[in-house]
Length: 290
Image 1 (cartoon, rainbow, N blue to C red):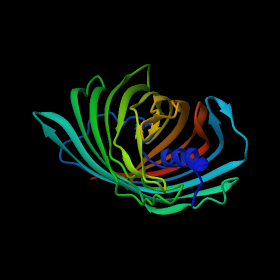
Image 2 (image 1 turned 135 degrees about the vertical axis):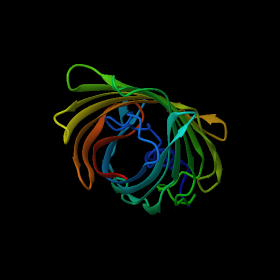
Image 3 (image 1 turned 90 degrees about the vertical axis):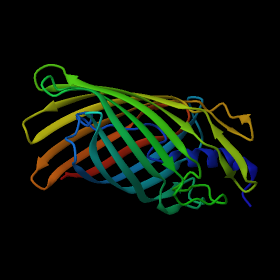
Image 4 (image 1 turned 30 degrees about the vertical axis):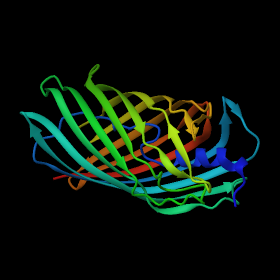
């Protein structure tokens, strides 16, 4: 039986492995409205490494390492609603989470993660001015692997819902800029830990600002800054004073080919108040629209 002093590790582990936990990351240029009746296939391989644990902005003792890898499979289709562009997709990750270093005695997990659905809608589109405003409604359902006796799981055993608003417009010359804001609401995990306690979490808010440079019709590069705040957790109604304050960045290089788009990305955390800091994140993405 895991002792009660391991509960903080279990809470942090639950919050680590989810493609929806910290933000709904938008790709450079992704806010551009799609053509109707188009299909999308996206395959994303993501490898990340987390290290030092922080509590209230202070680095904690120990030498933790967490290796996370996942393949995200996304399929979607565009259509119109009242002559406005709309898009629907479903995405499911498959991967593993391995604790190492001072966490090496903890059990990891592998398998399917939680599935996310998106319905996006564009209230404003101006193709001539290359200016777009989009909104999105997300729902994540607990399809992932989860065991209350395990500290690290690929699923969260709870529902998440999110709203997002995003804007994209030209800046200067071949530069485009984007801005987005989203809020994630979390359902309860009513089977948390060996005593099957109830884990609750307050809403989490994320702002992101990105810059994209179009080198030519084939190649582009971009950079995005993210700031996330909120998301305090409680166990059986007892607050844990673990409010998230996270700053991170992501660099992007993309190339368009006849067979689809290839995207390479690298990112990391800049500063975090609570949790295991992400030292690196590598993403290889293939996108095909047909």
